[in-house]
Length: 120
Image (cartoon, rainbow, N blue to C red; front, side, top):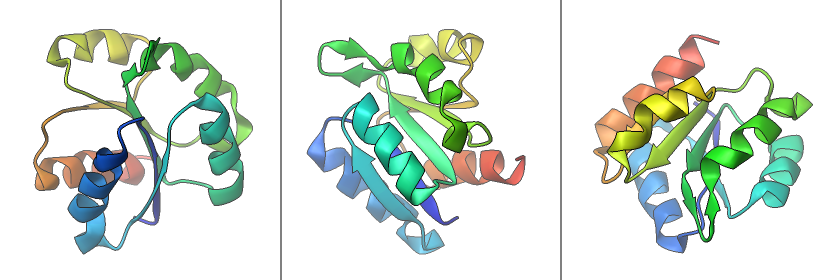
């Protein structure tokens, strides 16, 4: 794994994800909205995107089509990352490549990311 783009407006979540992926040597870049995500994707070329569904007053799933249209992300797996387990099916139907429920176990997060990076 090289770089994971985390779209999540909770500052502490970045630290948790970093600690979880540290053993794999992954670098995590956290952003809080679509504009920052696009800018970071163009600059950093992520291996995977973790997209939170609760971004302040915005539903993260509404960002998915715009992320898919971004040329630097067309081949990058986008994994939905949320406390709302009931939204897994919806997220997959809307085009997410994977789903990770919060709270998460570090090994589970690593496995999902590695699975999707390996399949690209």
